[in-house]
Amino acid sequence: MTDPALPPDPDTLHPIEGQDRVVLLKPLITSPLISVGDFTYSDDPDDPTAFETRNVLHHYGPERLIIGKFCALAAGTRFIMNGANHRMSGPSTYPFPIMGGSWAQHRDLVTELPNRGDTVVGNDVWIGGDVTIMPGVRIGHGAIISTASVVTKDVPDYGVVGGNPATLIRRRFDDADVATLLDAAWWDWPIEAITEHLRAISDGSVAELAAIARRLT
Image (tube, rainbow, N blue to C red):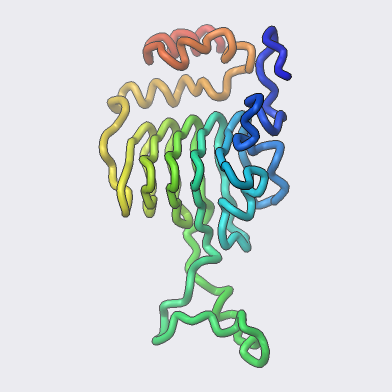
């Protein structure tokens, strides 16, 4: 049970008492190809501890999945990695070599594929239910992804996107405020400072966060 006098522990697997469907991902991850920051959580009513196999699909490397701190991943979030790609340079897209036998000698047909690189999710990102994120996408800090979206291209910092394919609906803040928020980078503050200024982070103004960040430096 969490001590009410102390901040929560980022290495606790199930942070919410009585809600085993919610897990903090950092203490769960074992793959060297996946990196997740403190307090990022995933919700899965069926098998929450199977994130690496249920939510990260076709991950054969070498590209990585990098997720920042304080992200909220709703049930059904899926990351499609580059291993899902098929060759499109010739008449057929069928992956013949994976079937084995004498076809296996042509393994380059399934390994030498276009690669968009790492999939990166910034800090403080909220991903709605049943969202699919395609290979090589970069989602900016503070972004929101609407339910059932398919994210095929990069999402700007503090952008709100939705749809299939996901398109920009609006920006949560103007360019000047976004720059201020990125400079304040509250997610990198010491846990004691985050705890002390929790209400300002959740319900305060950009100017408040900027002033706190200046005092902390």
